[in-house]
Amino acid sequence: MNLQVFDTYKDLSRAVADMIGQVIKDKPDAMICIASGHTPIGVFEGIVNDVQSGLLNISRCTFVSLDEWLGIDPSDQGSCLSMLRRDFFDRVPLNQSQVHYFDVQVSNPEEECLRIDQLIASHGGLDVMLVGIGTNGHIGMNEPGTPFRSRSHISELAEETRVTGQKYFTKKTTLTQGITLGLAHFSEAKLPILMANGGRKKAIMEKVMRRRASERLPATIIHQIQNAQVMVDREAYNPEG
Ligand code: PGA
Image 1: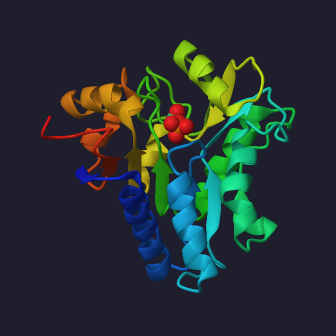
Image 2: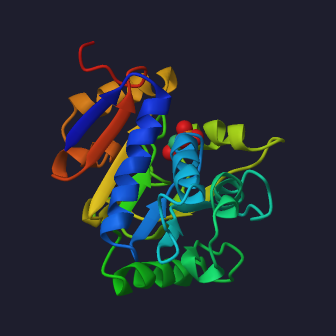
């Protein structure tokens, strides 16, 4: 695991965007998993700027969305897909074949998990997997207790996720289950990036950095991934205390 601490969210976001940009420059047909939510917004802004100014060409990349709420209409503005569209997909030139996500309207979500696993396997794995961290230490919708060897699966949302997830919605929304890439996808990605910013993440980041790898705290998986990049601003984690 490699830790990098930045003074500001802006610097952190720029560094993560550059990291992903470098992968794309080295491998133009890279497959990149991205999280929705508030953490990566600055990264998307950086990539969008690079694409618009001609510094980065993403025309051969494919993007895979990390997770989705089950039972929520994808057109709801709080769905993961809506967030990613707003923050990224709709702001760069991409065709449909470059964008992959869990379709939650299928009759059999288990099959949907297999479809996404096969898609990733057929590409030879993810080149980048960018995730945030929940205040309960989850990665994607891999809640505490999820096996490190998990691949795509349906998840029962932890109470904390049901409550904090409300921040994405305009009205009170019942969140019970999700569908998510697994922790094995993260450990097997060529470049796994865990990103955290802001004081709201300080308590959980301190816990994750202090503890040994344990499935009780999913983000501690970073301790057993040699190439995991932990990218934080000083508000989220300050190694000097
Ligand atoms: P956030 O969500 O980026 O909106 O803070 C992170 C998460 O819950 O995984």
